[in-house]
Length: 359
Ligand code: KG4
Ligand code: ZN
Image: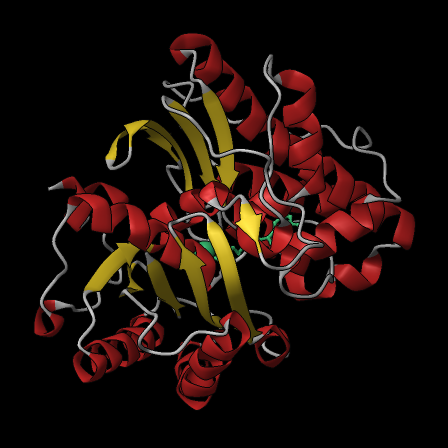
C-alpha cells in the first residue's frame, strides 16, 4: 500500500511517499527556518503564507522523486492535529482537495503519533540514509520530545497506548529555544545549543532538576528560570536587568558552559524518566521521537543508561516531515475506515489520546 503523507503543522511544509508503512520512496521538506530565524521564533501568519506558496510544488516533487503517479497512490494521510491553525489548514485543505479529485481514501493523523511512527521506517530507496535495522516491537516505550511536547507513552500495540506522563509546563524543545535566546544563540535553539555545548563543560553550572510527584512527569520552566538566574549571577546583575542585554555580557567560554550545563540537565531529566519506565514496564523496544530526538547528548546518555540497545531514526525523520505521517497513515489504514473528506478538519490542540485511532 503506497501512501502520500502531508505535513504542515508548524514551520515545515513536507510531503512524502511511503510504502507499507516502512519503505521510504521520497521525503521532501521545505523548511521555513531561515524566514523565522529573523524573528527569533515562528510567526504564525508568515508560516501559513509560506505553506500556501510551496505546498503544491512540494507534493509534486515528492511524487516525482518517488516515481509514482496518482494511479499508484492508494491513500493520503495528513497531519490534522496539533499545531498552528493556519499552518494545519493548508495541509488539510490540500489533502482534502487531492483526495476528492483523485478519489483516494483520506486518513487524518496526529502529528506527535507521527513522530513516533518515524521509527517504523526501516527501508529506503535512498541508500545513504542510516535507518534502524528493524521495526520496533511491542510493548514499545516512546519518548516524544518536540517544540510542543514532552511525553512518555507506552504502546501495547498499534493504536493501543497510554500516556505515562508529560510536561506540566514547557516542552523540552521550547526550553532549548528559550535558553538559546538567553545565550544569544539563533533559532531553532536545539541545534544551536548542541553546537555551542561542544566546547563547554556540562558540569560548570549546577542546575536543579524539578522534583515532581510522578517519575514520568517533567517540568522545564523551572530549569529555564534557573539558567536565567545563573546567568544573571555570573555576569553580576540582578533580575531587573533587561534579559535581551544578557547575551552581550557573556564571553564564549561562559556561553558554551551554560549551553552544555543546560543541555546535560535537560537531557538527564528525560533519560532518568525513560530509564525508570524501562525498569517498571520492561518494554520490548524503546524509541525516541520529535525534533529533540535529534539531540546527540540525548542519544549518548540513553545508549549509556538503558540496559537494552536502542536504535535511532535519522535526523531528517526526527524533525517535522511527511514520511512519518505517511508511515502512520498505513497503520491507521489497517484498523480504521478512512474519514469522509468533508469531515476532515483541523484540531490545533487535540491530545494524542483523543485521535480517531483511539476511539
Ligand atoms: O518536532 P519538531 O521539528 O517540531 C515540533 O513539532 O515542535 O521539533 C522542533 C523542536 C525545536 O524546539 C528545536 O529546538 C528542537 O526540536 N530541536 C532540537 C534539536 N533539533 C531540533 N533540540 C535539541 N537538540 C537538537 N539537535
Ligand atoms: Zn513535530
